[in-house]
Image 1 (cartoon, rainbow, N blue to C red):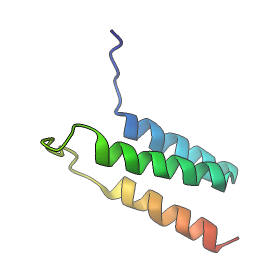
Image 2: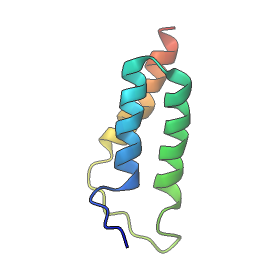
Image 3: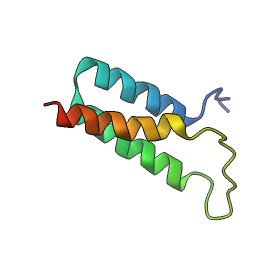
Image 4: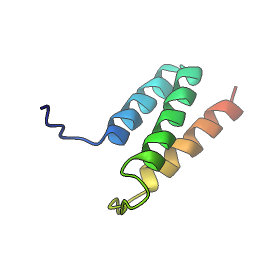
Length: 71
């Protein structure tokens, strides 16, 4: 069994930032969809959200919109 030290959503967010920095907006958009999926489906209906700071996730959505608008 593999022990993971970071949440999947954290890893996706890092990849999203890298895609944005590289100007790969289509890839960034797909990663943001994967991020949204990981945030909404992990743990099931009875799961309790333990993240205190949702700001990085909100910023990701805002960043993609700003990058799209600047093209």
